[in-house]
View 1 (spheres, rainbow, N blue to C red):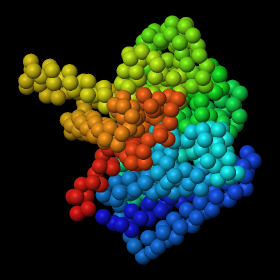
View 2: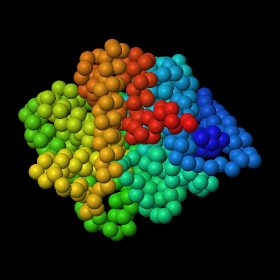
View 3: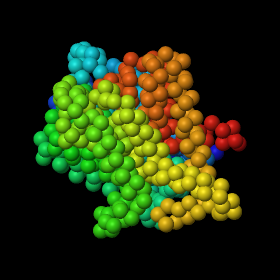
Amino acid sequence: MNLRAVTNAIASVLIIVGAAMLTAVPVGLAMGDPPAVLRVLLYCALGTMAVSGLVVILARHGQTLVFGFHEGFAVVSLSWVAATLVGALPYLLIADLRWYDAIFETMSGFTTTGASVIERGLPLRSGGALSQGLADLPAALLYWRALTHWLGGMGIVVLSVAIMPWLGLGAQQLFRAEVPGPTHDRITPRIADSAKILWGVYLTLTLLQTGLLCLSGMSWFDAWCHACATVATGGFSTRQESLAFYHSATIEAITILFMFLSGVNFLLHYRALRGEWRCLWKDEEFRFYTAVCLLATASIALVVTGRSIVTTAGEVIPSASYLTSLRYAAFQVVSIVTTTGFVTADFNPWPAYCAAVLVLLMYLGGCAGSTAGGMKQSRILLLLRYGVFQVERCLFRRTMSNVRFNGQRIDPIVLHKILAFFFLFMAINVAVTLALCLLGVGDLVTAATATLSSLANVGPGLGQVGATSTYAWMPPAAKLLLSFTMLLGRLELYTVLVMFLPSFYR
């Protein structure tokens, strides 16, 4: 493995992270943050860029940097770890988080998980006061918190490929190792051009939602932060009560729409923006994804009708009507299936059927090629079809595999990889759940859903990690384990697991 090439690429990614962190300084200045907060962010950003720039110069000096699959996997996995360590500095120096809490919060941001350890009573270095919630944190820190979502949603390495053309030597390996989903279709023959187009669509959706939220009564700052979290399917809010704080059906409707859109393959968005609107409904995964959202919403709303609904803002709605239940069911369903993690209602007290459906949605996740987590709808659809094929083969033993997706026959090698992914996903889910139980993390429901939520990059779970709870109470070892689980889920297992093979280093 070419260590100079790997070091050079990781340092290049950190330059992007440092530049992004630097943008928090003018935002904090505009929002009236204390000078001490702005100085910390400025020093962290400039220090990261300076050190990373020096490493880039030294790594490239007199060497031809050659990328292969080994280097691609190493760069992607280690870049996310390095970005997390650098991104955790503002939490350590401003919010006074412990080092493992800062790593958890930053990893949760970059992987778009949305699980948080920030709660009321958090000590702040600036002024020495105790925070009464997210709204009391400096605006620059909340902005950086939202920006970690936005950078991680489409992928910090893919962003680097888009704006640093000299990384083109290994662009294909980097792109394939980071972009989620069973397939990695190119929009253009050049990977760098494809990355630019994807980020262009991503930015367009973010700006469009920001504008709509501003028109609906949000401040520009809250609108931008929530748009970053929505389009990245992350779920970090600037309010402890999440979107229920605003008591606005319009804001919730806008967020539902953009959460749903962000769970769709971005390749379809690009084609739709070019006028090929029919491509959406022609896509089998999009139809399956839409049907799942509609059926889950309708059934949960029916079950919740007539019961009390408690919002995350503490408001109690007694004997909710079907329309009211539909409003809250739709938000929770779309938020969970897209692994965004925003909440407007506490779904812990809801009937067991609702909990079972929401857990199932965590497994499914969004579409391949989207910013959503989970197993991806296309994998589930192909597994269902492969199961039907194997049942039919009991009668017709000489039948050749003819599992199709969007009219194309799927290669058996792809199906085997999907089966292996399903097994690894479930095995890791069970292993981490058992580890959390050994670490004394609550009850089985809490441990199991915290694991699934981290692996699928959802955020909230059930039990003690429900809609109105944080992960602050967990022991340090559990937080670090879940941080690693988030990384596994965001990079879809293989990219990280391959680095644990002895043969990888030969």
